[in-house]
Length: 221
Length: 305
Image 1 (cartoon, rainbow over the protein chains, first blue to last red):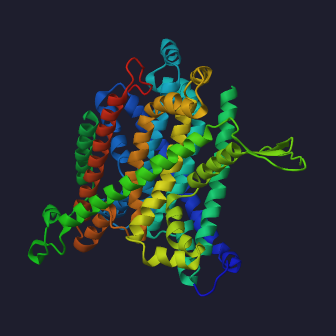
Image 2 (tube, one colour; image 1 turned 180 degrees about the vertical axis):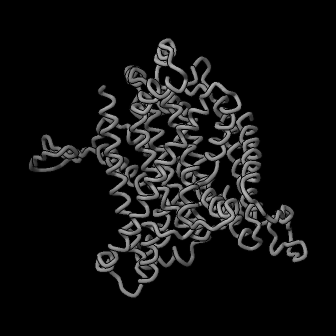
Image 3 (cartoon, rainbow over the protein chains, first blue to last red; image 1 turned 45 degrees about the horizontal axis):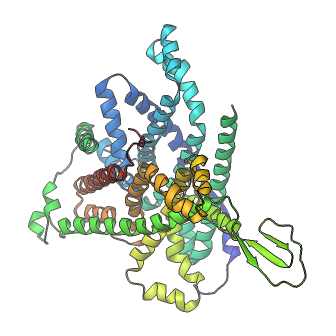
């Protein structure tokens, strides 16, 4: 570092660039949550389904991904997706697929706990009314399960938001990587990394605050 | 061991599925995983076998050392967060009475009382909030690049130049502090899950607060939280892979390096995957034995599975 002191100028100067990076981070988070939630719900339904083979495959999938580090999963898909598809599709797509596949395993476990938290009597009542298995899930069990799960789903969303920083390893320009580019080109590591930490901290704390509110709200009912 | 068997089977199924999918032309060279020396004819540009072993060793070393920090520090912080009684420190010999209207400091009859408990509780809360709300990768960069700059010049220089294995030490330190915040949450939840009656009973028979924790609350709560602690312990192994960003050659970094040298990514990543799953299976098996060993006879396991 050529001079001491904390250079605020460089931070203000790079705000547009950082904002672009944050845009990518948020996009990855939102798409990852949406994809992970859909796939995770399907997995949870498969895991709780009365067919042995289906629940075994879903269970194995979940155990498999839960015992792997996310970085390794990102590397796997970064390497594997172009090979399987036979063409290059870009870092963003392969990382997004990796996130969805990885997070689905965690969402599946949350869903499963949520579905199991619905009283058995509810499902029996649905059956007694003559609902089919999909109808019973769709109209009776899942709506109640989702309500129980909302706080923990938001917590997991915060975890995913933090996890997206790992796209750093494949050089995708998310928030952290953008800051890293500025930090290294301007030789201002301290300013940029501290800024990144503060921004992440502010956003995640806000999220945690919302989780606490949700918990209180649902505890009262 | 049934879990391990399931996981092993699932690897085979998943590999089979990916192998069948699409137009999959790939030059299989599983033999490179057995490379023990440089031999261009066999496709070995490096001793890949030893690289993987070395990577596994660093993963286990970093994770275990970090866990020691995380477990001890996390337990202390978790306990601090359950303190609801003020701990008063009395500072005597103040001539004139001063009146404070704050929660943590007060006066009466010429002495000042300082509530240390309030400080410790607040410190523990801030610690957990900060370490949980900043991504681990950012924390790692802060410790590695920023922290030495904030110290006095000599201390910073010592960290940068004379610290043995600077990357590994930083990774262990950072991972330990980060995981401590998670352990603290589990410990706090464990202590809070014990019914209040136990604590009151312990106090009623005349135990001091320290004795209440030592003989009543902690022995039960640590047994209750073995399953969530197991998953945190596994988390340390997985998170240790982030250390590759500051140059620690652990398992994931080594397999990435093999992929770059040999283009045999499939084989290298499979080796890493199998090893991570193996570590997971061994840890889960070991923790199940620990859980069975320390079980209090007659107490219902809270985490029935």
